[in-house]
Image (cartoon, rainbow, N blue to C red; front, top):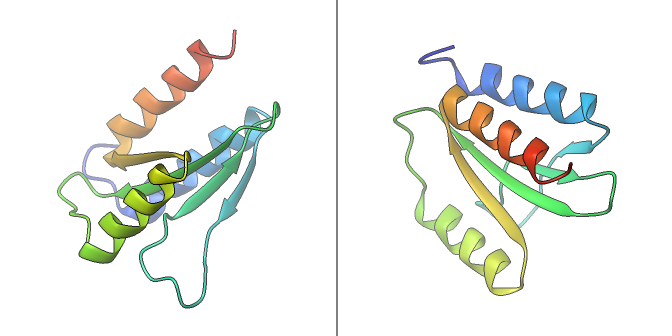
Length: 98
């Protein structure tokens, strides 16, 4: 999945997290430009925000501000660049829930 479109990578994340028993919402917050793409609620209640980018994608200023705001409030936020980062995130998620 090298150089896959963001929509393909996002679908993989959604499908894999759903398979793991998570609720995986497409996150849209009117009036709050730059919020992360996905909000995942793990079976044990952890909430994870994920911003997905292509391998060469860049965060906009509003995305950086929203990520900083969420992290300042104690939220877990990941920025994943491409399919390899999604796969790494999935391995990390699995390894921390055993």
